[in-house]
Amino acid sequence: MKSSRKELWFNTPTRRAFINITRQVEAALAESGVREGLVLVNAMHISASVFINDDEPGLHRDYEAWLERLAPHEPLDQYRHNDTGEDNADAHIKRQVMGREVVVAVTECRLDFGPWEQIFYGEFDGMRRKRVLVKIIGE
Amino acid sequence: MKSSRKELWFNTPTRRAFINITRQVEAALAESGVREGLVLVNAMHISASVFINDDEPGLHRDYEAWLERLAPHEPLDQYRHNDTGEDNADAHIKRQVMGREVVVAVTECRLDFGPWEQIFYGEFDGMRRKRVLVKIIGE
Amino acid sequence: MKSSRKELWFNTPTRRAFINITRQVEAALAESGVREGLVLVNAMHISASVFINDDEPGLHRDYEAWLERLAPHEPLDQYRHNDTGEDNADAHIKRQVMGREVVVAVTECRLDFGPWEQIFYGEFDGMRRKRVLVKIIGE
Image (cartoon, rainbow over all chains, first blue to last red; front, side):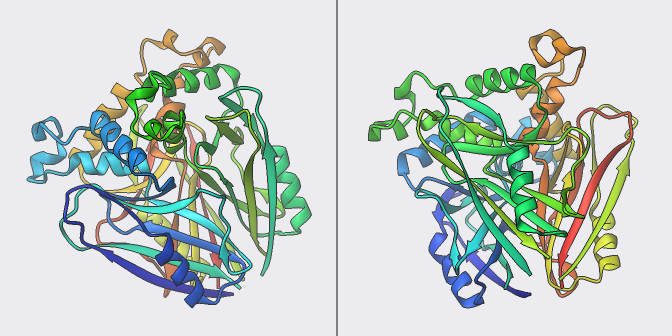
């Protein structure tokens, strides 16, 4: 069995952002030399997500607006987590809706994807350095 | 390490549907010859889900009604994704709530399931041919 | 390839609860002897979740309140699943939002976690014995 590990780092200029990381995951896969196996891609922080969906800016605005209705950032005092001095309770909830991780099949050295699948980093409490883990196992 | 790959195809007669695919995943596992490992089952399309829950029609009607309240299909113009000419922004959101994939343990050649776990394909933008990937790794 | 399997059992005194199971997953990993690989941790019941987030009691109260707004337990007759004599339709929905499973990388014999990642069992229909599966594969 082969395994490999790579960290991707992000520092978004805005509190919330969606970043297409498909090319970076493909690069990590190429480096790993794995031909058949699984790739795990997960946020290492609990106020960020990794998810697979469409690379279409209108859809990303829809996600942003929908998540903000579902778990608004303000007023801050609606969340007990923010009583600790944090202001990111909404980010923990948004990350839970969008997911922590994706697992992707590797077939013949490639991400085994349908036509429109793209991997995104979803940041809900940005403007600081945060990480994604890419772990690959297989042969 | 062994690995295997199988595609399951669907073409639902309705826009939205839930289909129990447990038997098909079990058949793919039997074909693979894997005794111990992991099965990844994922939608290859970004407006469909794979999830594990109860095979009970009342619950499926509850999911349908609840998802429609959370992200209504209409009016179409409430979503910026639909400005592109699409009408399926709600389907991308519903899929995100229900999930893209499940990972299931394989133990002694079987899906290592609790008493009520069943795997479903969740279609949110159907009436066309779409795929699910079953990737199995192990020994 | 090595593989191992362990069940964790719970019987919560309340209908709903969040329990930190990180230490128990670490113990299962240590027993397995796996140095590089993947750990799958999943609820074996369809009205419970396994998820990764912050071990902060205020946040857990926020999740509880937010999930109850999203899919209230009562009135029971708002759900068709409860027409079967069950009273846990809300639990099936809450579990879907919070997720069935997590997949965690194993690197140099340890859970490959960011600074605040902790694994939780989320119970939405407790007061009875229920299980979590920990399946580990690697080398």
